Length: 81
Image 1 (tube, one colour):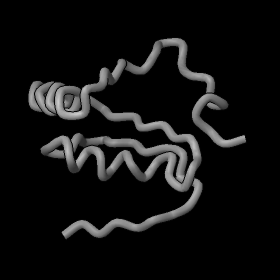
Image 2: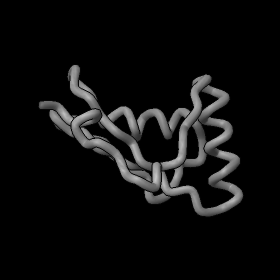
Image 3: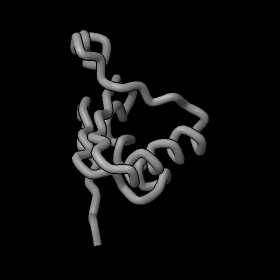
Image 4: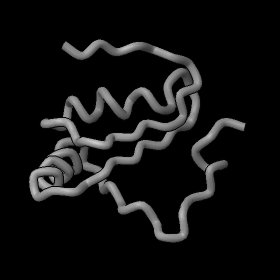
């Protein structure tokens, strides 16, 4: 059984392994940007099964999850000032 904790000011969630379903994904990435702060979630997609889970997440929550840009990101977009 996996236990979760609530910690204020968590700005980044990294999924090295995607969960098996969309609701578990939401539970994981929901840790970033809680309590009114900004957040960023990064997920590694390395298998065909991961691709299927990613598609299911996008469909379930009606969102597009873009690839991480080659040029990186502006951290201030996601981190509290």
